Image 1 (cartoon, rainbow, N blue to C red):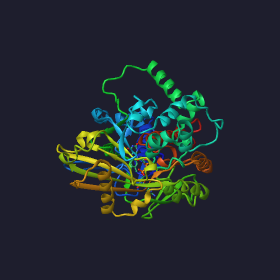
Image 2 (image 1 turned 30 degrees about the vertical axis):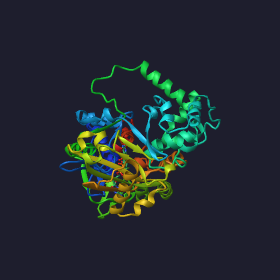
Image 3 (image 1 turned 180 degrees about the vertical axis):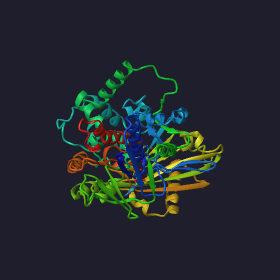
Image 4 (image 1 turned 90 degrees about the vertical axis):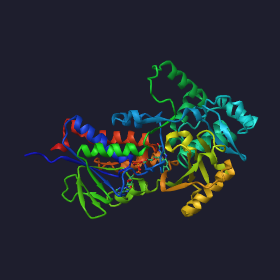
Length: 489
Ligand SMILES: Cc1cc2nc3c(=O)[nH]c(=O)nc-3n(C[C@H](O)[C@H](O)[C@H](O)COP(=O)(O)OP(=O)(O)OC[C@H]3O[C@@H](n4cnc5c(N)ncnc54)[C@H](O)[C@@H]3O)c2cc1C
C-alpha cells in the first residue's frame, strides 16, 4: 500500500512562505521524497509586502523596490529561477544620496555605509558636520571599546558612543534606523546590525574593523565576473514582483496546492493524537499537516497558536511593528528635472519632518518610467511618526507635495499618484528581541514540526527572508535523512 505523502502546510504567501515552499519542493525533488506542499494565503494576491504595479507608462513598487547585494540569498534564488539576466543594478551615473540637514539637502559622501567615507572634509564643507563633529567621528578609531561586551545596546547608544552625537544624528541614524522605519533608541544593535558590535569587540573600533575586513576581502578577491553586480542594491527588470510571479509559476509546476483568499485562523494538535497538526481556515476548512510553517507577521502567528501554546503566542504578539506608507508620484520630466539629483534623500529623525525619505525612482532605475516622465517615491510614517497615517490618501499626497516643495522646490502637481499603506508592516527588533525569539523557540520545542518564520523574527530584508526559508526547509526535510526515519512510518 502506498504511503500518503508527508504534508507540509505553509501559512503566508509572502516571500518567506513562497521561498520556503520552493526550497521544500526542491529538496523533495532532489531526494525523491514523497512530500505534498500546500500554501495558505489570506489575501487575494500573492507576495505580501512585495507589490509591483505595472501601468502602461510606469512600473510602481508599492513595497520593497530592491534588495541588498551584500546578502547573496535573493540574487542566488533569482539565478536558480532563471532570472539572472533580469537583475538590474542601480544607475551608476546618479549614485549620490543626500541628507536633509539644517534646512538644505547635503550630499552624503560615497563609502559612508562602509564607514570609509571618501573626501571626509566635504562633510564639513557640505554642512553635514562641524569640524568638532568630524573630529569626534574620526576619533572612533581610538575610542575605548565598551567594557560591557555582553550587554545589549540600542543602535542609538552604540553609534553615539562610538562616533559622537553629531555624526549619529545627521549621518548614521537615517541610514541605519531608516531601514527599519524605526527609532534608533529602541532598536537592538545585536538584533539589527550585530556585525558592528563584533567589529568593536574584535578590533576595538568599527572603522579599523571595516578596513581590516575590506583589506582581507581584497586579498582573497576572485576576479570579478563580467555582469556580476557592482551596486549596493539590485532589482528585477519587471519589478520585485517578478520574483513572486516566477515562484508561483514554479510552485504550480511542482504541484504545490496554492490556496488563496482564506487565511488560517487556528492551529491545534490533531484530535487523532498522531503527532499531526490541524489548521482551521477562515472558511472552516480543516487541513491536517505533518509539518506547518507560519510565514506570517508575528502578531498573526500569535493569533493562530493562541490555544496551542499561549505563552509563545504572548511573546510573538509582543514583537512591535511600525506602520509606513509609500507614495509614488509621476511628473513631467520637464517640470522636475532642475530640482532632483542623485538617487534621493533621507530625513534624519531629529528634523522632525513627516517624510522618512524620498527616492528619485527614474534616476535610480531609469526604465521605470517612460521617456518624458519622472517617477518619485516618498516614504512616510515609521515608529513615532505614525500619526500622519491617520490622514486619508488625498491628505497624505498633499503633505508629501508640501514636503517636496519645501525640500527641493517642486511645486507642479504630479500627473499620477499611488498610495500604499503598510499598517504594522515593519517589525521592530527592539532591545530584548533575540532573547524573545529564543524563548519562543524554547516554548515551541514540544511541537518540533511547527516552524515559525517570516520577517518578524530573524531578518527583515528580502534576502534574510529567503535565507530563513532555506533554513526552515532544510529542517523540515532533515528527518527524512535521519537514521530512524521516524515520520515516514
Ligand atoms: C514599504 C516597505 C519597503 C520595503 N523595502 C524593502 C527593500 O527595498 N528591500 C528589502 O529587502 N526589504 C524591504 N522591505 C522589507 C520586506 O519587504 C519584508 O520584510 C518582506 O517582504 C516580508 O516578507 P514575509 O513573507 O516575511 O511577510 P509578508 O510579506 O508580510 O507576507 C506574509 C503573508 O502572510 C499573509 N497572512 C497573514 N496572516 C495570515 C493568516 N492568518 N493566514 C494566511 N495568510 C496570512 C499575508 O496576507 C501576507 O501575504 C520593505 C518593507 C516595506 C513595508
